Amino acid sequence: MSGPSVAWYLGVAAFLFATGALGVLIRRNPLIVLLSLEIMLNGGNLALIAFARHAGNGAGQIFALTVMAVAASEVCVGLGLVVAIHRRNLDLDVDRFSELRG
Amino acid sequence: MIAASAGDILVWIVWVVAGFSCLASGVAVVSFSNPFYSALALIGNLASLAVLFLLLSAEFVAAAQVLVYAGAVMVMFLFVIAYVGPRTETPWAGGPRWQTIGAVLAAAAIFLEIIVVIGLTASDSLSDSKPVDAAFGTPAWIGELLLTDHLLAFEITSIVLLVAAVGGVILGAHTKRRQQEEASAS
Image 1 (cartoon, chains in turn orange, red):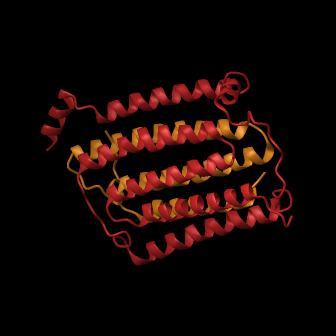
Image 2 (tube, one colour):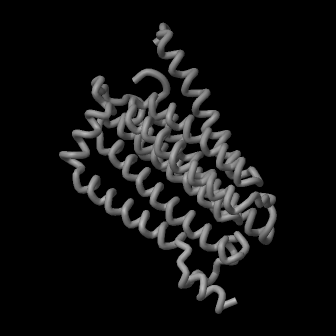
């Protein structure tokens, strides 16, 4: 395999995952929390694809595609929640969503 | 080893550029105060990740990343951000100071843990990857895998997407009954 070895890709994946985790923990706006969640999922995807290339096995790439589908579903539901919250004229602040019912 | 080929150097250059823009745009997503700019930075992040996928000979996944993520999902994000309206917040404020410090410490701890675990368990075996043939990562190869070995994952994914789509519609629907409920509640 030409270019950097798999360990370099794993380093990038770990940094992306940690950055996304920081965003999820630190930000108040649910939209940016969702965006940070995407970064975490993509860090996992990069690790999966790096290991798939390393092992010469296709299962990692299939798993990455599944993760992308799950991420799309999560965005769909999350944005639906954001729109529903906005329509009720509530503040978009994750700390205030302590009673999410009905 | 001394005579590194020109192709190898080129791959390194592309890797450094894509990896650096990936990390920088990831940090930008977290640190921008305007959600619109964060979403734009995430598009850059996804595009540079697609370049890294190409370097790992995952052509189909790279194409799906650009089409599905940077295309469809981000358009939906931008629509909702435009619908909700521009709301800026300062990223490092809102919440007590110990929360911010704790979050930074937790993220750093996650990063160090991953690096240490990878270094301890797999540092010897990561240097030499297996050679793969030209079909690795092509759409035909992925499609064959999806319809033979991983058929169950494929079918379950379709059900998950269907359920999420129905859930999104229900959450975002503006029915007359709910309007009456909200009017009576307020």
